Image (cartoon, rainbow, N blue to C red):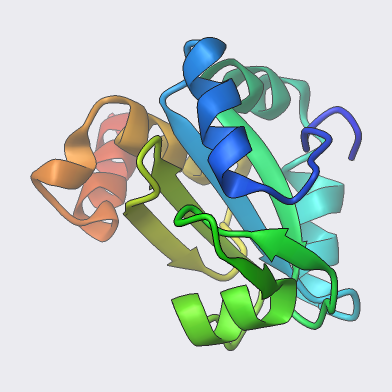
Length: 152
C-alpha cells in the first residue's frame, strides 16, 4: 500500500498545508480496523490498482488511520487526540472501512462507509469531490447517474 497512502506524521494541519503546497484539493482518510475483512478487500482489489493510485495521489493527500489506534495525532484544529478517538468521538466511525474526504480547511466533503463495488465506483467518488459535485448532490445520486451513463 506504499503506492497508495502517503507517509504521515499524524498531523492533519501539516498534511493540509502540504496538500496546498502540492496543489492538491484535499485529504482522503481511510479509517481502518486491522481485522476488517472489507478493508483488506479494498486494499487487495481497488486501492492496489494503478489508475486508482495515480488519480488519488494526483489530487489528494491520502492517509490511513487505525480506528483502534492509541497513536496520538493532531487534528485540523491543532489539538492532540488518539487515532481511535478522532475516528469514533470526532467522526462517529463505527464500522470500517470509512473513506472520509476533507477540504484543505478540514471540512468533511464526503463520508463513505463500506467497500465500493468496483474500481470505477471508487474513482467516481474522487471525481465527485474533484468536480465539486458534493456541493450540489449526494454521492448516491451521482453514482447512479455515472452508472447509467456507463451502461449506454
